[in-house]
Length: 381
Ligand SMILES: Nc1ncnc2c1ncn2[C@@H]1O[C@H](COP(=O)(O)OP(=O)(O)O)[C@@H](O)[C@H]1O
Ligand SMILES: [Mg+2]
Image 1 (tube, rainbow, N blue to C red):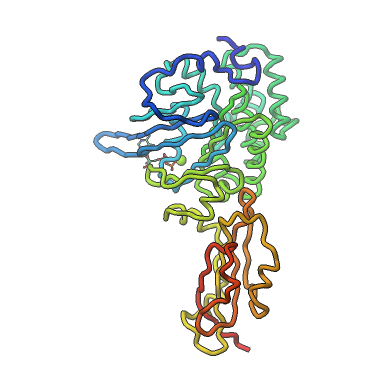
Image 2 (cartoon, rainbow, N blue to C red):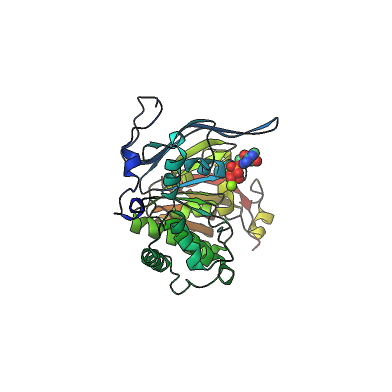
């Protein structure tokens, strides 16, 4: 085993592989962007158990750029794990092609496949640490398995990585003494031991509480920025996607139903599955308001309750004068705004007096991508 392959230089260790011609016919012409790191072409995956066949992936086509954090979201059973596992060939595709670094993963023989897998880091929901081994031993294992015998090199790499993931001083601790977030930090360090350029994350934060999730996602982003990694992460949580992904693909019953920059998918979700996944991020109407809401004005003093959606206008902030221009008798009932990739998104709930449901001209500014009269309330006083 040539350990130099893994440790020399920060550039692709797989240059030998990369320089080989891609085996097998590739349907041309089909130009991919120069910076493509992972290309998924016409991928189908069918599981056959006895006479039962499950079509887990259907006609998947995606190109993931170098240095991107690419999210794949979908409900349980959508095919996310199947898809991510085809990238390092933990699963074979039934048809189609996966190119990593322009290498046709399906064409690799066992030895080259092992090399490729070492160059692709992977982290898991349940961390997959060996509980009878210390943090140090867990990490060392990744290098020993790759044939590295140089103890000083192993120790140095472990020190570097523990510092990177914020676990200095934990080398001799057993996993059972670590919190979930710390275990995932070890998982991340282990995935990075052999200096991969691609990191796959399978529901990496799904076992963690929101605060820990946030810290792990910040760490992943930080690592991407520092090491120039490409990260592909799968999740069923839109909040994970909005926090760190550049682009996202929505998987539903084995198919990509939409994909694009995260802010766009958030602002103009096209598919029902996407809207369902976004639903937990939406604030519901306050209960008291909901109880009083009527479909028609019942009284001359009735006020229309209007939901204003801020999304997709490219607006970077929400000027307060815009709210003022909605009228002095317009009341703000609820607001929920956040930033996704620098775009202001969210919803405002306001009420205003109107007898015929007509809204003033000032409501039709393009800043509001949607204006919806939800109903009417009659103030008690
Ligand atoms: N090894 C397997 N054998 C048979 N069916 C499988 C296997 N792995 C996954 N499936 C099926 O493939 C579909 C997609 O599963 P999976 O990729 O695990 O989805 P997700 O990760 O989105 O929850 C599901 O219907 C699942 O039951
Ligand atoms: Mg899964």
